[in-house]
Structure formats: structure tokens, C-alpha cells
Length: 132
Image 1: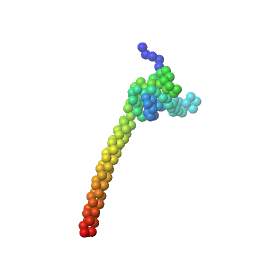
Image 2: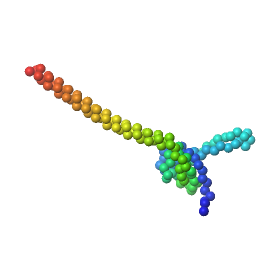
Image 3: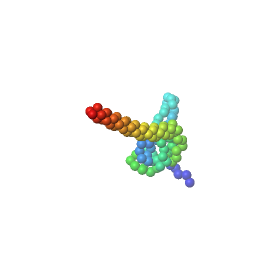
Image 4: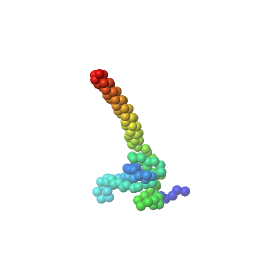
């Protein structure tokens, strides 16, 4: 038995909240008097257990009120945004490389300190010999 809930398709514009995404519902219609095509968009908040990300196209279903502003639930992710997934992977890779660079910088610093200490020790030995 199919229920009578509204189902709409939109694009995720924000996924910064926990288990909530902002979905933009766009539509184009012809103006009744002037005949020009008018584009309009509405943003709604939807409960997300599927793990939708920024740029994904999702199917949302009307539900009972879940909070003050949440009235929709993500039913399924229709289309994943490949660019956003690639950008996220690139950012994670860059972060890992940044951590690796910090480790290498620390090792280089330790080696430089050891070299300075050895040079100071050698200078001290030369001064001791020159005093004799």
C-alpha cells in the first residue's frame, strides 16, 4: 500500500549539522500572464540517516515534525556528487601530507640541534686546547 506523503527531489546545499541536511528544491514554471519562465527555489531541512553530502541529489519524503524546522526525511540518495567526494578525499590526503611534513620538520629540527650541539662541543674543545 502506497502512502500519500509528498516526495520531492532536491540538491543538498549544507551538511554541517548532525543528521540534518539542507535541501534546495528548485522549480521552473511559466508566468501565467507574461509567459516568461520563472525559476524559484525553496530550502528545507531534512533528517538524514543515509549520509548525504554537499552537492548530492536526494529524494526527500514529508514526515511528521521532527523539530522546529525539520519536516522532511531523506529517503534515498539519487545521485552522488563526484566532485565533492573527490574534493573531500583530496582534503583528507592533504591533511595527512601536512602531518607527515610536520613530522619531517621535527626530525630536521632535531638533527639541526644535534649538529649545533656537536659544533659547540667542538668549539669548546678547541678553546681548551688553545688555553694550554
